[in-house]
Length: 310
Length: 315
Image (cartoon, rainbow over the protein chains, first blue to last red):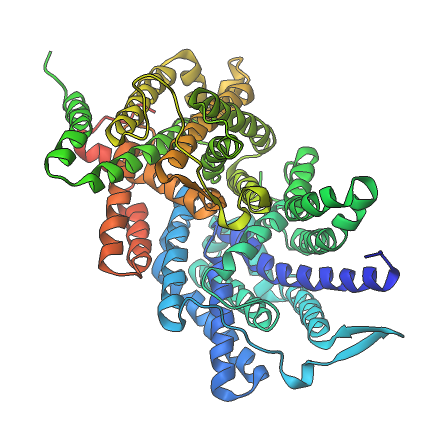
């Protein structure tokens, strides 16, 4: 396998696509942390729930778009219920309690999904109108569906930016992040705000899960692998910062995808091909963690530390 | 001076554990020997985590990594025909202590949530490393060629002997752990947990102390891993799976963190609970999950407090 320009471009787009998925997850996680100071391990469960609901709705309605469109409010609803029933009491607790309680939620959701849909992986297909390829450049086809994921992700990022910086609600969110006692003293219903932010994060995770269905397999526990990578994203980006989430997601998405595609052939030019065969994949799956360690060594707060937080 | 309830609870607990092999033999239930040995191995892992979590306030979410390193330190030499236990277990402790030194050196630069996530990420990295070791079974893991050999009367193939070896290690760890947290070293660790700025102001550099504690906990975790590989006679990257880290952490909380003895109770109760629930239904995790949440929300002081009375937390 030689590294040529077309392949490099294709893998870069794949990296971008994965980065977009990571961003959709990271945005919710980092908002919830930034505003409620809550570490939510169960964020990956919402991704899983979104994927299953989208698959189920698609099957019922016969339309992929409708399936995804229905999965979004449904995941939001699940998120709101979880927030009200289990998480609300955790905001004032320390991070250890939050980690353990949301770990309990993961066990619960994984098993619930296994009871309803079974443990076997479900494979869904890309809807016909998105299943083709289009030409990015002459002679370089790229799957339409992946391109749509990239576009949706960019659109969501812009909407999120507009929501946070340009609306009254966004102003409250920012105020809640910098001083929650003050904002509730000023008459804002902080609990309602929390529930809204959590629901928003849940819907974004659900969107990521719903779109992931046709690309990756849908199975219990599918949210955990991506959750841990999302942790890497927000640690690199700076916890609580949306801008950090964007940058971190793209960096991690690229590093992971390009690492898997090119580390092996690159290594083969330095060491013997059989050794590269072994070391390549191992190094590729470790690359983002090494990257994170390197970033933290120089900037323990991440690349874009959120302001108003010591 | 009257014997305190705490001492009484400890003596009773120790005697109970020591009596498991004869009782299992009398009632002809070797299964219980196996179960309790497994509990004690996890207790060793949980106690080692309590050293840094309960006393140092370091919420390490990657403790299962050391279990894995310890297990592979037994499995890989065994695969190549080296079955000397002193060598294998020594390697297990050394390798996991070294890994803890590297992980700690990076992650202790941060604190709070970052620390939780970084330790988790490092464990995940080692998990993937385990999967990529195709010579040693890769994803599926591999059978242990044979239990570690020590020569003399210590023959781990003898279930009861193996049991008492594990018990002895657990007691040793608890004794050393207790002395450690009461020592000057332990005081600095605890001071750094309650107020790092103040600890620094009176002239200590908490980083080195914390890193040392982190390395000690890692080494003890590695020893637990070496025992676990001998227990299951099988090793897989799943030893390092992050849910395993979560379980060990839950054992500490369930038993009572910052008590050292509490995590032993936590390990026993959690594994017993898993055993009972999984006999009831294959979907036992749907019950365990909410139990975990309820314990965190309402019973955070831990079981050791119930058994040994109040004022048991010395951290």
